[in-house]
Each structure stands twice: as C-alpha cells, then as structure tokens.
Image: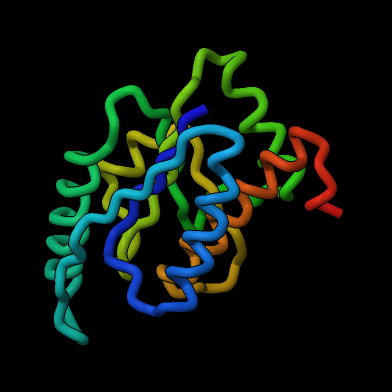
Length: 159
C-alpha cells in the first residue's frame, strides 16, 4: 500500500523531524510512504472570519494541487471519527478490498481545513477532543500508521 501524508507547514523542531523520520523509515517495510508539505498562509493574530476563510482557501488550493489523483483522501478534523489503533488497522487492512491502494492523510494548517478539502475526504479522523500542535500531530499520525501496520502483521510492537 502507498501512504501519503500531505500537510500544511514545515516541521521545524529537530526532535519532531527525528521522530517522523524514524517512523517513516520503519513504515518502509510495509509499503511506500511519502510526506508532502505545502506552505502555510500567514493570518493576522486577530484576523477576521473573512481573513481566516481566505487563509483556509489558499491552503486548500495548495493541498488539492498536491493531492495525488489516485489517493483515497483521509482528513484529520476535530469533528472526525475517533478510532482506536485496532480500528484504524482494520480500516487500512480493508482498503485493498475496496480497491484502494493509495491513502493520503491530510493535516491542515492552524485554522483547520477548508470545506473544499473536507468535501473530498472519504474518511474524517479525529485523534482526540484535545488540540495538538500541527507539527506534533504529524509525528502522532506517523506513529499510528506504523502501529496499524504492525497490528495488521501481528508483530509485537502493539501491546
């Protein structure tokens, strides 16, 4: 299976980069994984609703331009479904039975995802009711994808 993680913004913290690189390397045993970063759009600290909407729209244009046409889009959203690690593994394991060989996980910017991206999503996921920094979410997502594949394969990583 091919996995793409498409996200807004660049990883800046060395420890997060190292963690994402480690799980990306481990995932190589289970398929092809790629990470695509698109530029984030600056918004004034106290931007109006319209200014925030424009930021989300600009980021959405960049996301959709980089979304592989063959990919099955999965968005990370506050209002998405919360799955256990085992449930995520079952979702990924069932993808080939649906004719899906390429999954793209999409992480928006600090203001979230524009409706145009959310409409393309085949599955909206939420990892928690808590708010996480987008850079940290990239590490959490990468680890959970790795965990899902170890569950599918029955390796001892997941306890």
